[in-house]
Image 1 (cartoon, one colour):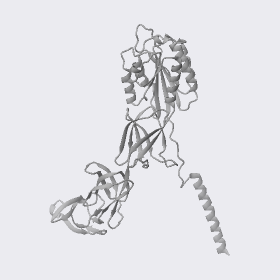
Image 2: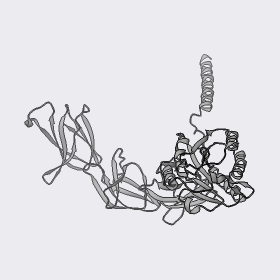
Image 3: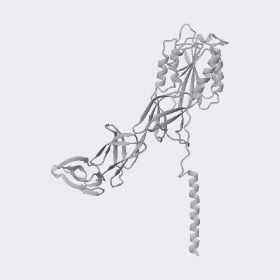
Image 4: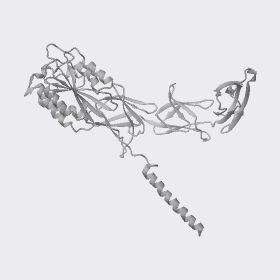
Length: 469
């Protein structure tokens, strides 16, 4: 009776422990994959560079250019109040000093970047009277200070002007410098009253506004392009032109600044199609697909609001290694090179299978002696297996530290293979191809060459040979 009772108590205890353990799994998520997190959205910062030079006081249809531009601009600002991940700022030029005389430093950040600053920008615009000159290049140059350092921001400039540079600056050069430094994306320019595209195309994306209606439309288009993401699909093509390749990292570099913008590990969606990516359309990209060897596609441009399919040829196959006796070997590196090339593409472990672009390769198995296999073909979606003779293992043991080397014996000649390590670990395991070898050794505590010792030994396939010095 007591034995049965003991069994029942133990059984009850096991059940309780089981429930506790299951509860622990539920709380901690142990054994389960963590829920995937979406990539955080960047903070978009738009700097409006507003022309308040003397010419903006001129008549244009129903009012002055400045009043019309300000009114339509304010209407856009109201629509931006509740846009997430957005901050705006206002820089004005030509509004502080009367012209003449000309003051080419007349530019000021009137409202810096901050959340919920629409009302402040509206107030500033009401107080401004156009009066000065047009230092466009200098204003763009000074805008570099307006964008405080930020690791995850999209910095955009929208320039609104009715005239050209009047201070001998070079807006094109300044814009290129800002983009190359990675400070801003390619700027937008809205020209009021006249077509200035010939002068501003090198600065950024130009929109001509010869009427109030065109100005309003241009402003809406610019804001839409600045805020709305664009989608792209990367088709990694096999040798038949089909998008079957996947599971490889792709790096998107800004083609102007050279900075890394995105890293995506390519995947297929639930329908078996390449995944859709959200990409900033305001940049030109150089894409590197990190196959072995890598594949490049440069100067990729996207059209804002339009899905783009980008095809990149990346046909791949597999490369594997085995021994003639199917003996498992670990920690044996294999150097992979393109056929006839000395550059190392990869160091693959003998017991791993790796993916490579289709083509021909030279492989070097770093056993001792090394085995070089030339002109190995990797075919589309096929596993090419390179077979080598079964190596043996030589366990070299010594009682003291010292200086020594392992040689192969080839037709009466000693061919150097390996230098023994001079460290406290006095046993070394070496993969050696079947054959005759000799180890030569002298203790570091002996100061006479005649105390050199040597020992010949034979390594057989798949066997371990102990070499005691």
